[in-house]
Every structure is written in C-alpha cells, then in structure tokens.
Length: 255
Image (cartoon, rainbow, N blue to C red; front, top):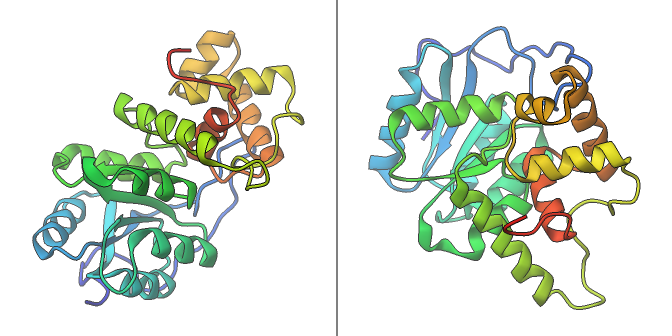
C-alpha cells in the first residue's frame, strides 16, 4: 500500500513551530489536521480504521500499511504525527516497527492489540508506544485516542491499561537479574519532592488538571513539573513516566 489518497492531507512533511514552555513534548506543533499512519495486516481492520479516522475533520490519514516494514517506509516518507501499529504483522512486527519509527522522528505510537498478547503489550510500551487499543475499539474512542496522544498525553485512562503496566512491571522486576538492565529512565534521585509527587499522580492516571486540583497549583505549574521530570529522567512522555514509576516502586497496585 501507499500513502492515503485523502484529499484533506497535506503533501510533504508539516512545518514545525515552537512549543509552548512547560508543555509536554509533542511530535509537531500543528495548524492543520493531525497526520495519521495506520498499519495492520488485516485488510478489514485497516480499511475500517482508515475510514473512521479520515472522516474526522481534525484528522487526516496520510498512509496505510499492511506490514511493519511498509509502515516504517511510509513513516519516513509522510512524517505522521500519530502511528497506529498492529503488534503482530508479517515481515516486521509492530514493536520493532515502533522502535525504528521513533528512531527516525518524534511520532506518537498507538499499538493495536488484543487481550491475549501478554508481554507484547509491555514490550510495546517500553519501546516507546504512548498506549494501546483493542481492535474492537469503538469509532469515537479510536478518534479520541489519536487526539489524546497527538496532544502529548498518555493513552492510559482505562483502568485495564494501568493494571497491565503494573503487572508487567512487577513481572519484569522479578525476572530482571541483578546485573541486568535497570528500569526505564534514570533513577528517581534527581527529582524534587514536588516532582516526585507529580510523577506519583501521573502514574495513578490523573490528568494535568486533576493534578493541579490535588496539589492546589495552576495547571501551567503542573505542566512545568511534568516537562522537568521527563527531562531529568530521560523519558519520552507520560506513558514512559508511568512505567518508570511502577518499575522503581514509586507506585504499586492499590497505592
């Protein structure tokens, strides 16, 4: 497959503009629609997702791929803001495709999956994905998920996602040998007490507005704390921050 023939998408890569201070990192500051690339080896799913997303006035599908290798190629050609990747695809799986796409540029990745993929979900998140969706996701939820990650937010609102991350982080800590790789990001030492508290609240799934209300500060102040803690820990986005919080024991299920 090739780039989508949608009449609404812009040819060539989008122009970058400055990002507001304190904002979470985002792939591109946009004045036009969010550019989306979809990759799935099931034609019905690929056509369905493409049709739903391209029908949204603020979204534009710039490419559709039937395997991971094609997704990587199209991502290089079209520079999408958000990429939806099926975890299991021929030629190259979605996890490896995600790693290569993120190595080439600052796109956001949403993994398309089912409940029975176990460790694949965790591996996708640690590879840099901003979240995951089930293939039977409702049309409205699919479009909103793309908007969510395009804003730089983690796709972690559903409780099942946080439970999965918590469980996989616990398993990974048990399985990791003493001399093996440490948790994602640097250690929690560089963070101030307030930044640590913000990280804990992010891991619990709170939005910036909810964190601001809990800490009795402005939302702008929260955004500043989020940007600083991501930079200190060497993390890409809020999703990786959640994984880091669980892997280091800052947050555990039920806390």
